[in-house]
Length: 216
Image (cartoon, rainbow, N blue to C red; front, side):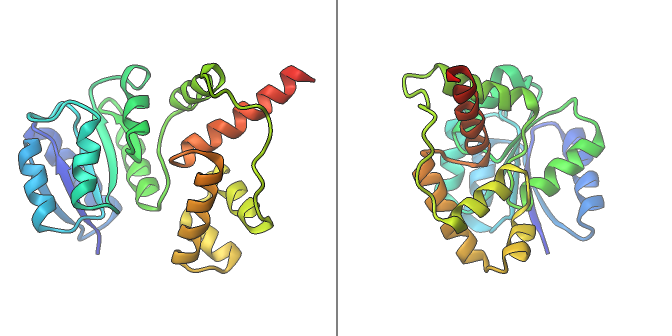
C-alpha cells in the first residue's frame, strides 16, 4: 500500500490533494504536515513513497528542502506543488533533485497523472521546463560537443526507453530485468552522461542532436 506525505500549510488544499490521491490509490496511507519542521519529523519516524511538497511551506522556501528530506529518506520521491509558475522556479528544484514540479493551478486530472508518473519512477515536468534545460545545456560552459559517451548495447536500450518516457515497470518487463538491475543501468547511464535524472538526460540528448544539426 502506498504511503504519501502531503506538506502543505493550507488545510483546504491538503484536503483536495488527499481526495485526489485516494482516487488514484484507494486506501492510500496519507499523513499531513503544515510546516517544514513537521515534515522532517514525519520523515524521521515514518517511511513514505512520495512527498508532495509546497515550496512556500513555513520553515522552507528553498531548493535545500530537497536535500534535507533526502538526508532522512534517500529513496523518497518528491513532487513539488507550488503557486509559483514553472518558468520561474521549476528548474532550480528539479536540478536539486525533485522528481516533478506541478503548479497549484493544474487541473485534478493532471495532478493524478503527475502523482502516478512520479511514483512509477519518472520525473514529471512540462515542455517549458524541458526547453529551459535544453537551453541551459546549450549555453553553459560545458556545452555538449555532440559526442555521445560510449554506452553498452543494454545501456543504450535502457536510455532510449527512459527518454521516451517509459516507466520503470514497463522497462523491466520489456527487458526482463529486476529492479536492482535497472537501478544499476540508470546509475551507469547518468554517470557516463553526467546528468542527475531522466529530464536532464533527455535534455542533453536533445542538445547534442541540436548541436549536430547546427554543425551539419
